[in-house]
Length: 385
Image (cartoon, rainbow, N blue to C red; front, side, top):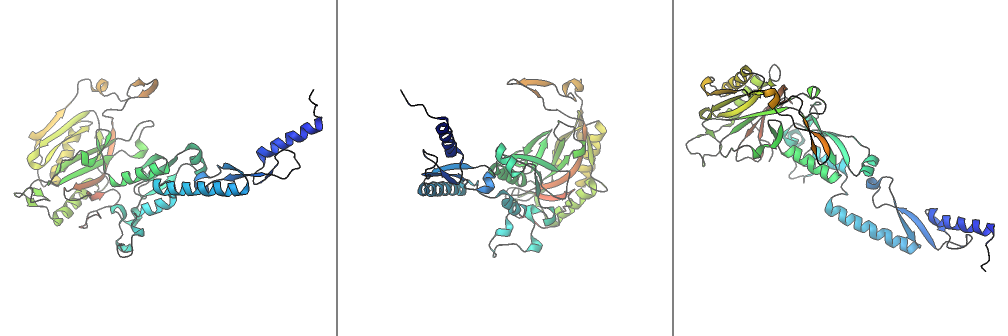
């Protein structure tokens, strides 16, 4: 018959077992509570900035702890360099603001007075606001930020979320692509414009942030037109005149005077459609408007930019029968894989205001910002490629 342990021995044994599991950075007994420890238990992280308060535990004798920590640190750093997760996001963003031009070799660095990150003045560079703390981001596995392409335009921001690697790519994509809109859906500009050798101007309009209804996306519009009789590539179009810098400068001033002064031009978006089919004069597009006159007024301004008088025989007006039912103001809901979701709005009603005009030339990698409500005005200097 086994000898029954006294209550004193039971307590000592219990304390001894607990000691093994709870002591950190100290000794832990291996049998009798009075024995010297044969292993240590340590908290460990290969990167305090990434892990914040989170720690892993390493157990073993001192030589083993040194070996474990060295191997984990080396593996972490090697993978971090290759995959990019050890790049400090805050430091990266400081370089990103200046389009990474501050870290170029001195022989290739642009003088501070001429530095135009992302094609704008330094005062108009991007900015961000972290919406989570680093510790909250670690626990969730992602960071959320509010991002401004231009720090001086407070009401034009967008929220991004993802890992730090995903965020870096999202921000690069946001700055390097021109977002345009067909109806209410964002599409990359270069995928919607066929402009090989034919200069194309895009006018962008956007709903003010304070007017956006809760639960809905911002209403946006864009209209493009060509510069008739002009080309940037005479080899492709030898019969057309080559576009000159003076012509582009004058066009930028015309658009500014017509669409920005005394205040940004606004379009009353609605459920009717006014289109203009005048390819001879470079106009072939449509606009969703509140009524016919809104569309005529808009295309009259486009003709004015080209030095022409509107040709009303090329204007077409379309009204959908029972447009309220065809394009409901409050879209119906539907079920997707068991989740109740709201359909996208089609032809929403609201005001969109002029934000920018861009010129697309087939031989340039980036569009030229002709003018914008951020203060841009083309004066003859091409954007950096």
